[in-house]
Image 1 (cartoon, rainbow, N blue to C red):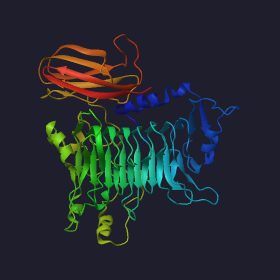
Image 2 (cartoon, one colour):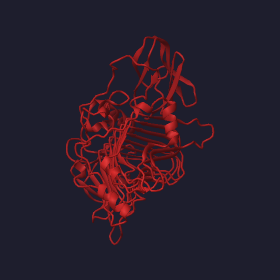
Image 3 (cartoon, one colour):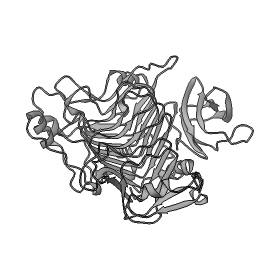
Image 4 (cartoon, rainbow, N blue to C red):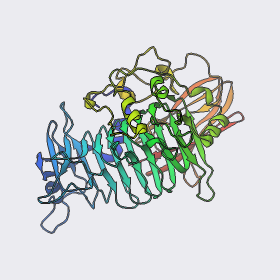
Length: 503
């Protein structure tokens, strides 16, 4: 997405984490063409075969086409970014080796992989379609994507083929995954039964998936974070076994400020599906935490009315998610408001009718899809229904929006909000509200429960507060990368949340 705004200062900070200071690093520009990504990066070595500089940033030219010579599978960390300036994202597509067939995936990292400002597709140079865009192929690797467009694959955007991986996506578009000729495929994340450490998704837009955003095959997720995202046309494959976000056993879940339109749009003839589903954790000693609030989930009325009598429409949340929503007192914050996007894909009426009739498959609307615009009227309730009064959904569609720092009225309850940005480097902001005068203590702990810093320890009046932590401990020393906890004690209220420092 081309629009940038103050609200997304997170982009700069987050990429500073991954890129460390791009301007201070060695940069190598890759010439557009066939196989140039592989030959440039794999050939960037010394006479003895060692990498010239492990911290090199590889720059791709805008308005240019890069055709991969087979799948790109680096065994060392790689960072690729679009060149500065205006112009379309550099386009990376699959190439077909001479005498060969379409590779299964475009990128198969076996080490950390970071990309900013790129278009990446499993479409090949002759119009064939590979199975996946990216495949995690080593335990514990980290994938970081910002301002990227992942588009067109036959089975999945990501196949998570190994354990304990971390995937961070911000300001991205992920689209056109799967085909109605095989609707059981068409996923964003397919865990293949592997454990996942982190899935972090913020300010992203997903559209035209035949099946699911997350497909669980038995692996556990440690931390799943979905905030301010837009989901449109996720099929669900016509079964209660294929729901939009099928988290499986997850330890910590945050699902906030999202819009989901016509997801699980095929309905189901074997029961009532739910967009967000969850299982209890399997890890020993884990207390599951779930925050699912300030979301808009809706279906086009004409779509639901078109279902055969044997087909049931989905609901937003399954019973376990609903339990946590009710326990947290957040039921009223989740709404169902029909909003009209400025220019989105057609409602999949013909796709749905053909599926249940068993006739030739009809694909979803992809015409001009790179020019879709998922803004909606500022008069909608959703426009100010976010946790901080911001619009629901991907905020990139609202370039004039800034963060809401002030509340119009005094808060009516205690609340500790998620820090922003998260992950962060070098600083992050923590917000909280107290409805009455109270003694307030805001403390930072490391993952071992050891106190790192105390940010607030004083009496405060009722109101909304914002505190910035600069990543230093109580001795003024910058902390190392890792997971940290921030705890609010105010009156009889106690709440703790997790944040990640990444360097």
